[in-house]
Image (tube, rainbow over all chains, first blue to last red):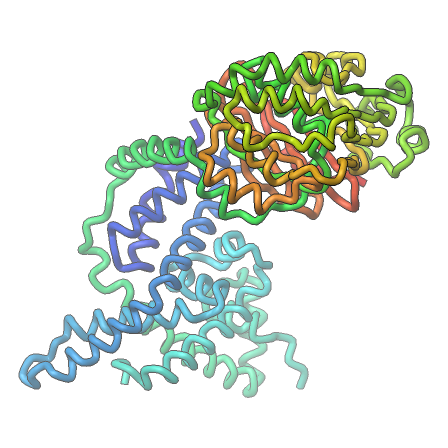
Length: 171
Length: 399
């Protein structure tokens, strides 16, 4: 059955991407379940080759994932402030590396949530190692425009990041 | 110097995403073009900085315990049964939707026919709809197991009332035609069919315009309302003898595949034959199109109140029925009860507009679907077995 095959093949990469995006394994699993539920519902309507089904699944997963991320923007901002406070109040003797790493993840997610959905998705998926061809398929844009879209997305990401967090921990 | 490459190529070059010959061409150009070299350098630095930020997302990712495929599959099974339960109770979702304009006459009767399994309810509902249909569709999920007894018991009296007081006149007989031009000529509007392809031409039937009239027998109606414990809805005696008229324009039916012959036009209100036998064969798909019907009612009929009663008859709690009825423009809305026990309702984009798709999920009509939409004042209804890409394509290729 096509569905079982798809589940076996795409569940691992999709869950991994969603964990990377949300930072929360439970939430990622819920989003992945919803993604496959939509596949289950629409399967008889889709019917194209398996590669196209993969693109469809990634697209649904990314839309769900980024929607969830945008929904959490306010909370992330709050945690952001609380987190900064935690770093500031930490004793100078403890470098709080762990906190700092989490801090940066939150900042990155917050910026991704603020960006235009397509730019954010392209940037995120490319950084996860997907090829231009895969990006074109998932985001439904021409493969020839990926380079331009990506470089603009990077520019936009950097501008927003700097505006909010300065050079951050990269400096 | 001319720069044959743009950011798009340069970025793809940096990312190693160009084909071998393209990659070599960019390399060759870069060797002799300092401007492009410096642009590549800028892009490279930007990429590197951004990549480092995003790489922070990977920190600790490998150590994470990810849900395995097996556990995911097990949870999916649970998720699925949960979802199916939720679908049984679609009230909330539907109420939050704005009602979208989309409707059609005959196909709706088909929906009802296959939907409502209790015969007396089916007939009564069909006839109520005959009265109130015009400019948009509102879907009401109905649970056939949840219908109030008062309604079930009143079915026969409603039917005999309609038998005596409702008339359906047709201005002619259905006519089979040989071409779209002929169909348009006969029906009086521009008939649309899928773009010509290898497919054989569908068989085309033009149904003549018809007119339905219901004469209000107020004493009898009030007696029925009384039996249903709804004397609060009693009609004013001044309405006695007034008529409600529905003008249904000529429609065109295109049948694709192997279809049973459309039954003789038998929409005489109050009989089982009001349900046309369309698109029931396994590889039969039927497209019906017609301009909007119009309805005339006597002034003084409290449609919101009657509508509320109708909604209650479908099993909706009284307060919900009242508030929903307030929001429906009853003169211009076709209300389709969709039995949630055995079907699903969703909105789909076809033909450049949003259509209402009702799919039977169980029962003897399992797999049957009806899709309704309106475009440029013409109503379209597509029905058949097993909703597939081909049906979407058919709707999208109309011209």
